[in-house]
Length: 81
Image (spheres, rainbow, N blue to C red):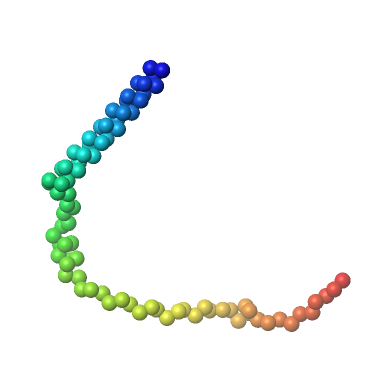
């Protein structure tokens, strides 16, 4: 009985800790803002100066190359025993 109460109490404390941590993290993000990932200067300049690319038309379908022997019609006779 005491083990069950002790484990329940520990789980309760763990969830209280997680809830408190998420509340503190929320307030830090709200007041200080979300930390931004800084890109190197050369990459950010390159990305902003890139022209808008036009959508490419679909490539024409490639014809399947079939061997001459493949797909040939062959006359056959059905042999019944």
